[in-house]
Image 1 (cartoon, rainbow, N blue to C red):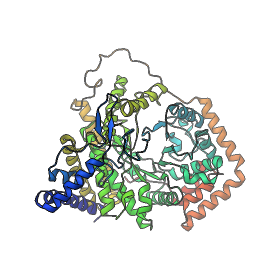
Image 2: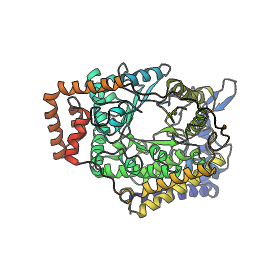
Image 3: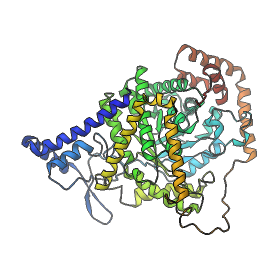
Image 4: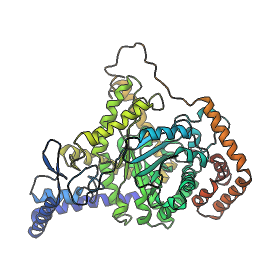
Length: 586
């Protein structure tokens, strides 16, 4: 029996507990009186907000009822915003501005600005362009193909891929250029890095670059996350470079180090986004993401790590598409994660929080009549914020055929600002539509379906045994095939593609962003100069890293030293010699 069986039992126990409280509220007079008094106190404690038109509302929406059973369902089933099981939200305020409640903090911008193109200085310029009007600096970084696979820009066969679809990072000096003129240790500065196989090496470069600029004390102030989710790589995306066992060890070392030394850093973003982009249904995305998360918790505990130390440093990343399930998908994930962490792993409240980053669906973007993607993304943003995501990235309309251009990147970011600042949907009331009959129906159906998927994984022995028989990958591939068939036969309408498409005519030639050849040569030249300057120290640094691997030390702590003298490719090359390369099962 896997840990998922315990999560299933705990979810059922919570449902029974909530139902029992509803029964008690209706039949037990002393309990009912106590509950009604608590409800009165809660209602009186909620501050009010005033809209620009002059109307006054409570800052948290509660049902207009004095029926004890309904009150018990709200308090014990879903919880209020910021209260267990956090169905409505992990924090009480979320996006509200000026609620009038005492001690209410100013809301932080949840918009995360994603970029990665060309060389480090090109992405740096894009970052500065995107953050000109942002109160908080929340950057998300895309890396090019060679970097994602741990290859140097001078490796055989990769020249054409340098800086394409993401930024080329070979050395700590590239990392310095990438974040030049950004206050990396500042309170409202946050950096996210979308990379997995070589994630520990890239994060080590980021730490070393920050230390070069701001001194050693900056390490404890660095804020952000790095994806580093190896389990979803073998299930969906394929960007895994070391064998799974070694990858999990390197990840565990990174989590252990950051938990001890970097209290503001999230060392793993447990990612459903790429599972969804590979073709999974919304329920599959949620089920595999949650089950991967519980598996990481179990693996880290087996290393002797304290769940209340590393648990608050876990974060999640979900896709948000246009299917009905997305109305409540993240709400259900928050609930199941909180129940599992509390009741199965004995975690405290901070470790129960499902801290979520959402990205609008890349798969939903269509090259045909691509400006329709502006509307698709806007709807997906609405769904993401209805799910109370903690941060969000909105895709650009031109992404189906190019690295996003400045115009569409700006429109994508402004779409979030319009929702959060211009409309009144989220800035006045925390849980405006939470608990509506339709949302509740979707929640219940999605929760049952996720737990059914857990039961299947448990019958297979858990996440890791299921990976060995390629269960998750097979299910994702089947769902992807079904999705494409539905588009082909018209049962899944795609406006401008299989419905209401314009008659074939002259195609608009899209502007495609490419990295100039001269810049690719510049990246290779910089890398080779770095290697020549550090030739005398690179060998001893790699030898020290090898000794750490062989003796069971913390590899990540050593990597922070190694990157000062060695390139990404040099480091992965030595690690390949020590632990081998990933070989997918057939």
